[in-house]
Each structure stands twice: as structure tokens, then as C-alpha cells.
Length: 310
Image: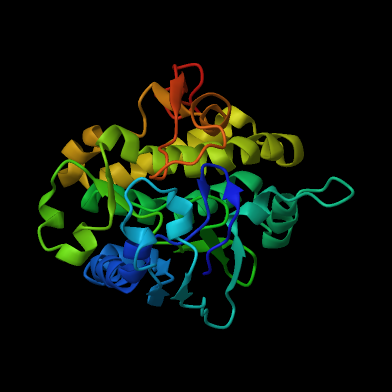
């Protein structure tokens, strides 16, 4: 991973020095959480593509000036990430690939469902069962989130193109932890604690809401209605059912389900365009900006009425 002088979505795509140098330590910490948890290792078999080496070069004078534009402190560095290694019979595709349609308008997802031999609803159930449990477990058990958008989340399929598990990448930039202290963070190394970004629980859930549900599922749902004859309401009911299934599996975490509430009736709306048009424009600033929040939108995962349940 290399720095780029490109302003994309919210930030310039450089490599912050402190976080870049801490990348291997962050990887060791999240690997330790996974490797010490049988649910993640044996049942989910989640793949965490570690950032195993890193380098960053500081300017001896410029980097000490607190008011200078942050992007010029992130120009020279590199992170080495593990490649994805799969056993025979498995293949991987980015989550974003599921939104692809060919020149004739046929969705790649529809092709995968046809190859699998499964009914569309069953194939979607398998997709959600592959994606959600590890993300939910990291959130509920460890107060830790990745950014599972279409590029960072990689779906692993079996030989029949049925989704079976999840691989995730991009840790040091996108791993965030709860600002509310949790016992599971007690053994977090100081070098990791110093660089990981923290968010209040209500915003921590946004990494799943915005990155996965809004950024990917919002577009996949109408595609499935159009090409797989799965109504959008049914699509979202399958997502909700997988969340509830996970919660029933771990009743001891009931307080965390309330703390990190993914099923709230409304969710805050993140507006990156608002950052560009109203707040930041293209001006320089000494720190990376935070995504603007403006209003709320209905949450399709909230408890449906009795007439809407499937």
C-alpha cells in the first residue's frame, strides 16, 4: 500500500506516519483477538489480511509544524500486506464485484446464483451468514470495527460459487474501537492504543451501517429484486434475521447489543458531499476531517410491522 496525492471521498490518500509505523502491531492485536476466539477461527474462519511490515519517512522540520496541511506529512511510506491464500476449491472476489452488471445488463450476482444451483433467497442467506457473523462478533465482543465496504470486504466462495466466509483488509487506517472502555481492551498494547481511532458506540456502528449496508446492500437489494425476484423488504429481512440469529447465539452479550444498536429505528446520515460543498471545500487543514452528519434516515433493519415480516 502506497501513498497517493489524490483527494478521494473525504481525505487525501496518504499514509499517516504514526499509524503506518504501527501497522504490524495493530495486525498482531487483531490477529490475537481472532486467534484466541474459537468462534472466529473455527466457525467463521475469517481471514484477516495482515499488514506485516511498514516504513514511513518524516521530514525533520516540516512534520514538527502543527498547523501545516496534513497531506504533506503523508507522502512517503509503504505498508506490506499479506496476500490472500486459499485452499483448492475456494475462490475470492471483492464485495464490490456483486454490484457489477455486464454490457447486456445481467448482474454478476445473478450469474453466481445460477451457478450455485441454490434458490436466490438461500444464496443470499449464505452470503449474509458468511459476511455478518465475524463483523458482528468483533463489534459486540470486542468493541472493534473494520470498514467493510466493497473494496475492503472480500467474499470467499466454494467450488459451486456459494459464499462461505469473509476476508478483510485495511486495518491501521480503518480499524476503530469503542470510546467506551471495555474489559476486552485491557490488554491492548500501548502502541496500538495510541494510534487506533476511537468512536462513541453510536458512531462505531456506522462503519457497518454506512460501509456495508448503505454502501453495498442498498444497491444490491434492488438488483436482487430486479434480477432474482427477491423483494427488497425480503432482502432486508434476511439481513435482520442473520443479526438476530447471532444475538441469540451469544445471549451473554445482550448489553452490547443495546450499546452497539444496529437495529435502531433510524440511523444518522453521513454526508461526504456536505464536507466538500459546505464544510471543508478544498481548503487545507492540519488534521484529517471527520465525516459530516446531517439528519437521519429510516433503518430497514428496524423491527418490521406484523404485515411486513417474512
